[in-house]
Image 1: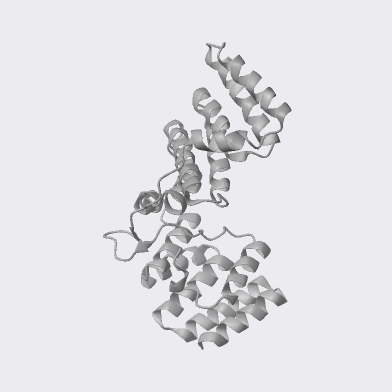
Image 2: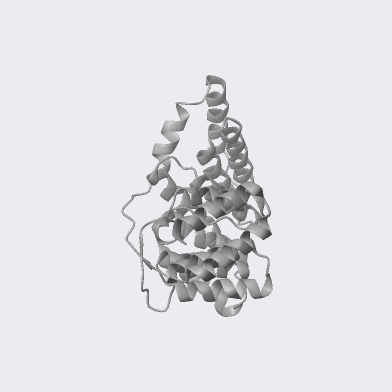
Length: 286
C-alpha cells in the first residue's frame, strides 16, 4: 500500500493499530504490489508483480533441516505410508496427519500445504476454506516476498476450488480478492471480484470498505467517499469507514470535513491513547 496517499506522518500508524485492535472492524489491507491510478471502470490498475513465487520443494527442503530428529523420522514414516495407499480417503487421512506433524513443530507453510492437499483431494468446501485462510494468514508474515507470493497463490487456488463448489460465497470471494491484491500483485483480479460482489449487492459492507481503501490508494477520492458513505448509511458508527472517509476528504483538500470526521472517530473509539494520536495527526495538517 502506498501510504503516502493517505498517511503522512508516522504517528498515524499508531492510530491504525489502535483503531483495529480496540474496535471490531476489518483490518486494512497490508502493503502489496505498487498500484497506479486511473483503471478504466475500476478502482485501481495494477503494476506488474516482479517477484517470482518460491517453490514448495525449496520451502520443504529448508524446513526439513529445522525438524528435530524424532519428528523427521515420524514424517518420513507417514510419507512412506502414503506411497502404499491408493484410495483417496486413505490419502486424505495421511495428508492430514502429515500436516498436523508439521504444524506441531511450527513449520506452518508446509503444514498449510498438506492441509490444502487433503482438502483438494477430498473437495471439501469447509476444508478448502480452512486451508486457504491458513495460507492467507501466513501471507501477512511471510518473511520474504517470494514466500508471500507462493502463499498467496496457494490461498487463491484453495478459494477457487471452494467457489467452484459454492459460487455464491461472498466471504470466500473477499478472501480470494485479498490474496490477489495483497499477495500475488494481480490487483485487478481482486478488484473485479470485489466489483462483482457490489454489482450484485451494492450495499455489501466488506467489499465497499476494501474498494474504498483501494480508491484512496490511487487518489480516486470521490469514489472512496461514495464507498464509505454507502457503509455509513447502514452502520453510522462504523469506525473504519469513518476514519477512511476522513482520509478521503483530506486527500481532496477538505480539511474541515476531514477533521470533523476524525473528531467523530475519536468519540466512537473513546480511548485516550487513540484520541491523543488523532489530535497529533490533526495538528499535522490543519
